[in-house]
Length: 175
Image (cartoon, rainbow, N blue to C red; front, side, top):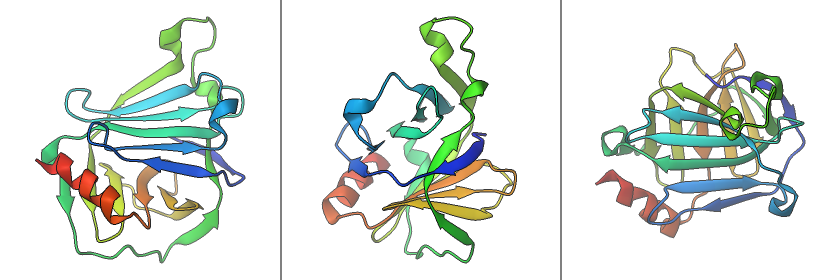
């Protein structure tokens, strides 16, 4: 699981949905991005999520749901609840987890085989990693909420206040 090292200051977030890639989130000024370090999770055949962090600081820069197995996406009428500790900020990961002993491009990636499910609600999307860990706290950055367990692992991602056209495009991945 992806371990959250700490939380940083809020960043401007951009959410893009289209008919090819379910969604891409960008945090902060895209013009300032250096090539990020990536954590990738999924089954690497039908499902893939890619999360990019700044090399020096570990601050979250991008998050892309590249593909999702249609069997792992569903609609829900459930409302999102909080009930947990909530704080404002952005994810920061420990950038020392990546092998930076050489400039090889493949060292910019950590791949982890992990299942996840996506639920699309009335105005939100929830992505939950398959684990036995429950959310202990939420870190909220504008319309994105990250669920973190007591071991500081990222266990869920919620996109809040989605527009009807974004929801429509996300539902097309269910087929």
